[in-house]
Image 1 (cartoon, rainbow, N blue to C red):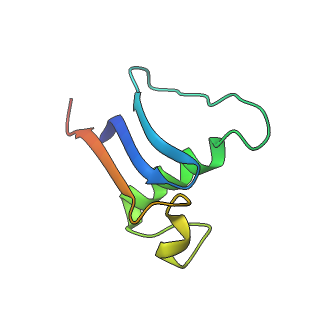
Image 2: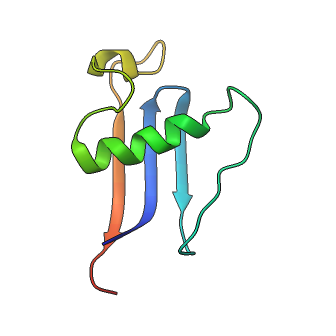
Length: 78
């Protein structure tokens, strides 16, 4: 199984974000506090239905929003 697209709405520091993964190896680059770890945690959330970092789901909602959505598009067996 391979994650091809990741869509975030209201998750941590992301109001809206969409990423597409076309390669087998993906690197996230950015300054401290840019949200690299939040992207990895969003992928973890898709896999295990919980955050690896914050046990309280409501703490993952971006400030001033009511909810968050994490959606992934996966490819099975090629």
